[in-house]
Length: 184
Image 1 (tube, rainbow, N blue to C red):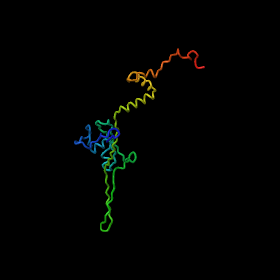
Image 2: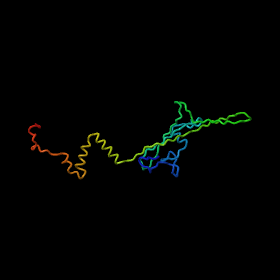
Image 3: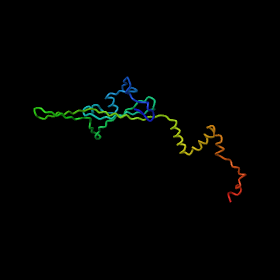
Image 4: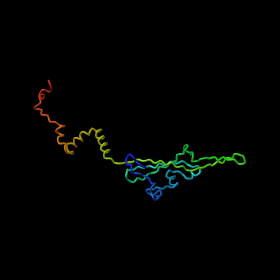
């Protein structure tokens, strides 16, 4: 499993591991047939005669760049209705002639077919995304003006004239319209 959008170099797999770690141990990379059936609450007695089709979802929920141990979801998917199963069987016919008579052998094979589906969610912390989310949050709350005024006034150096430019003092004594209430 790779999360190309987050980190192309990180790969999550047990393919290159040298030793087998049997389930249910931590970090298991080897499962028996019985382990997989038990994880899906599937009876071996039920599937040994008629077969089954079993889907195994291998789910990765990882922070990219760190170790990730997948979880397995096992489910039988050959269900016809609530009680009947189709099973996993295959019928093949072998035709041949014996003394000029057409003969047929029927081979009825049953088994358990596993379908593996790896899926994953990759996570990676990003300062840029955090700032974007915070700016959007504050903009929606209409607090962004107050926050940026505070930052530019008290925190960020080089904006000494910000207050003087934004808030201009008006001397009312020099205003011609101060007594009259407005232009004539």
